[in-house]
Image 1 (cartoon, helix red, strand yellow):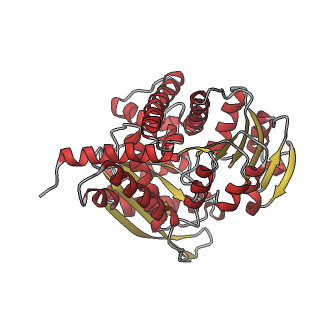
Image 2 (tube, rainbow, N blue to C red):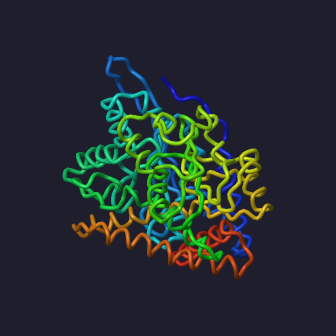
Image 3 (cartoon, rainbow, N blue to C red):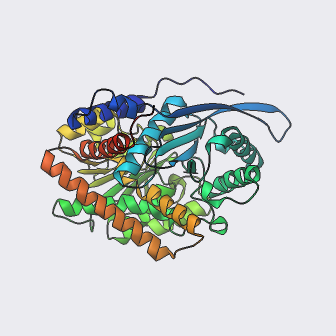
Length: 426
């Protein structure tokens, strides 16, 4: 088995364009922005394994370290059939901007394997993970590059990454990954951190526009870890989750879905929200999951894969605010159309940064051989989100920039300042 060729990833072209625009706005010296755009390292590896039936298969993986000027590379590992080089590079660039915007002493990285984890047994998934780690081993380390979970991976996968790396080093190295199980040095609050950040971003943008999250109608695409926690926490703030979608389709309720019942159903064996017996089934099939955005709502939270909202979805979208829980969920065409309509978009490099913020806190705990209580971790994530939003909103208002443009400028400036202070060798 080999990976299939994929078309060039439009998200890479888009994020490079945004960085160049930010560079022009900042009037950076010639060549600086191109230096910042170029990934530091792109490693492509072959991952052959034996399946449980004894047959041999091969997958392809990547690890991209985009920028390590401000600190160790940081970024998730994604297992999905669509993973390819350009997508991985674009996600690594986004991580560099995200850690810079959030003022975390980290760089940006991303990794992935072009594989559908749902088609592998647990033993096969472990073999893929261990072989992948063996191939990128020399580039990993607490002071080099620290992976985390992403689409298709979880705490168990991170445990295998930690173990495989630790075997090579000769002793346990918990700090080589974040998002790992608590028993191996993981952080309390990590599961909810990205969703918590998304909801905090939604609350802050509502406050900035003279309203609150309470009573707002929210639609969410994706009911994995991010979408599920966003739904739970937003409902706890008094918002109404009027629509949810996943690979199985869309469910809705004008009065608001029973989120706790939906969580229980999906955790008890329901393979999709449409099979949970909650709300009304509006549409079935993964191709119809974006129909959730056309439901009457105030806030839309795309928390699935990138490119979910294109021109058609943007035209049908009813919400006034979009909070990007996923990485790159809006295409450039959709972004432009929604800006013209006055829809307020809170960009991914800020909106879903609760996850990497908590990962940084996990790294700090690992370095100090400590474990903080959950309230302390959650409070630190929320305080960081609030401080950065205040800076982002003020910069946006003072310079007449959208939140996305303002976030890009602030992120690029942090990278450029670090680059110029360190100098160019030789």
